[in-house]
Every structure is written in structure tokens, then in C-alpha cells.
Image (cartoon, rainbow over all chains, first blue to last red; front, side):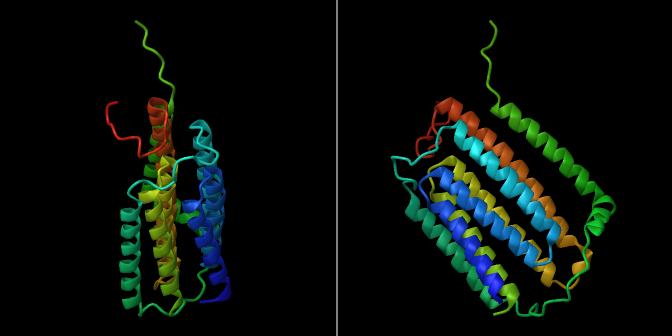
Length: 166
Length: 103
């Protein structure tokens, strides 16, 4: 564990915990953006430059803006009068805590064989493009189809229903 | 504690925070964002295992993370569209009040 990792991990956890805890939804999205940026920096620290910049483009850019638009269109900005947590928050919190306990226990008991950091791989964007166009070309095409279908479906679902002509 | 272990612990903490948010918040938008956080924790695992794995030059972990980000983006778009449609129908995004299926 190094100092940059600790700083980035603390930043990410703080941003994401604040996003799940704050009352005002707009503040939640701002904290979430901080958490996503911290995750992108962690990817950069793991020598995955392309994934790090994709994370910034997709999450910090697109998903956060999409969530802000959803908040705007459902008029749920501003502090809420009712409590922010649902009526069954104790059960939900217990489930999440139990999941973390089991995962941490399993991680603590295993992963002893992969302690050495391998030498830094020489991964250029050119190689990633090459792999996407040769070895992974079928998944890429399926992903394009999935994104097209999902976005058309989202527009159809969210579209204002017109009153039927009688 | 090795470096890989600390990355895995960080990602399990992210997953648990996302799960806690998805299970306890009342706003449907934040529940969807909690699900996104869980997907992000999985992505961090892909990248960490790829980097510490035996053959980082094979690029499989990177590819898996890229495809996973694409699926998460599609899921976010469809989920927020559904939230908008439900809001138009029942005028609320409070999950405690969305308790009827045909009302």
C-alpha cells in the first residue's frame, strides 16, 4: 500500500459515502462525481489509462449529467421534508454490513499467491483498438446493438404519451 | 497486506456502500446510482485482477471492464427512463409511496 493509493481510496470512499448519505439530491450527484473521478484516478494508478479515461467520459460525463436531468425532470431537487432513508433502513444496513463482513473475511483469508506486482505492461491505445477489432470484434458489435436498442428503448419509455385519437 | 488485497478490500467497501444506498434510500434515482456503484466496484476488481494477474499483456481484464462500463451506461439510461415514466404516472420518486402495481 502506498500513499497515493491511500489518498485516492479515501477520496473515493468519502465521495461515494457522501453521495449515499446527503439529503439534497444535487449535492449527492456532486459527491458522486468526486467518487467516480477518484475511481478513474485509481484505474490510472493501475496502468489502465484507457479504462480510466473511459470512466471519466462515461461516468463523470454522461451518467452524472443523466442523473442531474432525471432530478430536474422529476422536480426532486432541494432538501426533502421527509426522512431520506426508507422505513426498512435498519434491515438494509444490516444486509450491507453483513455482505461487507463476508467479503472482507474471504479476501483476508485468500489472495496470498498474487502478491508480486508484475512489470508494467506496455499497453498502448493502439493495442486496445487492435484487440477490439480482431479478437473482440463480435462482443463489440453486440455491444453496439445493445446500446442502440437500450437508448431507443429509453427514449420510447420516457416519451410523453399522447392522448389516443378516438 | 499486499496491494491486491487492499484493492479488493476497497472494492468490497464500495460494493457495500452501493448496496446500503440501494437498500435504504427512498429516492428512486439514488437507488439506481447505488446499483451503478456496485457495478463500479466490479470494474475495479476486473482492473486489479488484470494488473496483478499472470499475463497483463493479454488485455482481457481491460476489455471486460470496457464492456462492463458500456452495459452499465445502457442500464443507467433505461433505468432513468423508467423513473421518468413512473414519475409521470404517480407524481413521486419516493419508493415508500410506490406500493401499488396498477394504480
